Length: 152
Image 1 (cartoon, helix red, strand yellow):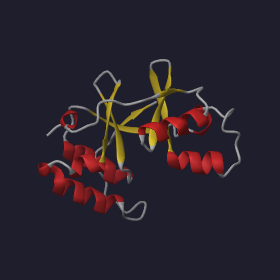
Image 2 (cartoon, rainbow, N blue to C red):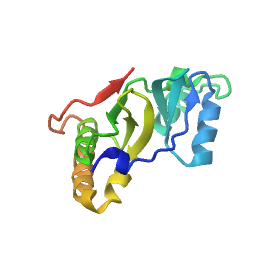
Image 3 (cartoon, one colour):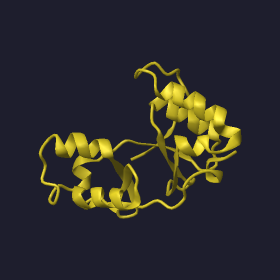
Image 4 (cartoon, rainbow, N blue to C red):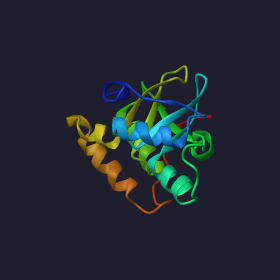
């Protein structure tokens, strides 16, 4: 099964100069924990709920005037839509992440796949269980896996 068969295709995104307040408001409105950040039509990073907690709240930043690019995670770990669910699970295990950006072969964002997406499909429940087990391990404990696609 390929990622395009199980991913969530509709992905909200914000420009890199959007305020972190706008980011948080969008997260709340659409009930997500990460928002992709764009510079024009190029994916440059993502802001997660953890980014907001550690880089905005903990640092006492002005949410109305701090731009998304100042607090985003620039290294976006991703896979291609035609890769298999097993390959995505391996990347999630390797990087100990629960959500993965999905790109087309032109490196354009086409979706997001979460560990929960793997778990809701019968054929991939075992894969999801194995991935969760590996993701939950201490950092650095995951075995070497195939290289993911990095978008910069």
